[in-house]
Image 1 (cartoon, rainbow, N blue to C red):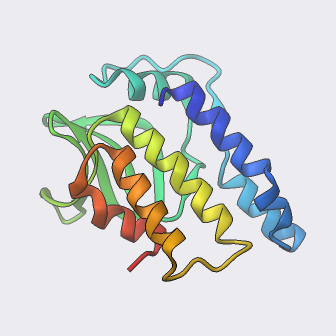
Image 2 (cartoon, rainbow, N blue to C red; image 1 turned 90 degrees about the vertical axis):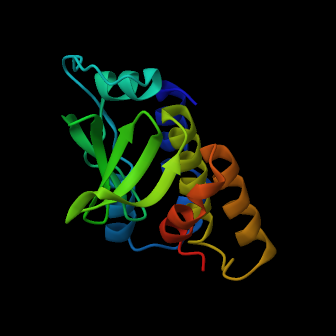
Image 3 (cartoon, rainbow, N blue to C red; image 1 turned 180 degrees about the vertical axis):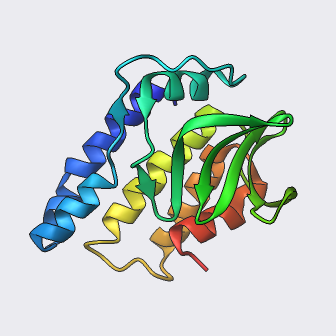
Amino acid sequence: MNAVDFVNSIYSNSTGNCVIDASLYPSEHSMMVKSFNIAIRDDPLVNSIPDDDLNEFFKIYDASDFEIGMFRFINIPVLKGKAWHIGYLEEDPVFLDEYGITVRDGSSINHVMYKCAKNGSCLLSSLNESSSYLNLCMIADYHQTAREKDFLDLVVELSGSDDSIQFYRTLLGVF
């Protein structure tokens, strides 16, 4: 999935029927819609991220207000050694390097906690589906159902890495 398709889909997720049907208080609805905020930058961000889809994403968009579950992007990616810091899972940094996208231990960035995705396109695709699932969970309980497992299997497949299952279990709250 490329950056533009991801942002368009996330926008649709944030204004779709699941969000409307969730019976949220106006303040909750407003806060939730704000968490889907991905702004177009006034000036394109020049970056040298080696992944074309993430390069385009950060070049065009400021997604620092965007959150899916406990995952959020940072405003400006930072090269640390041979890896690009692109976001956080709670307080632990998310990096892109030659091996893919991983969550590293915040106290020891050499320690990989979770594999997230094979590349940027796979990350955007799996985060998009994760967003859809979490929206559905606002109006129906899928805990320990076949649908919950189907969504988990789908996002892991979209991530391009079977090793990412623990990341998506954490992100989606599926245990």
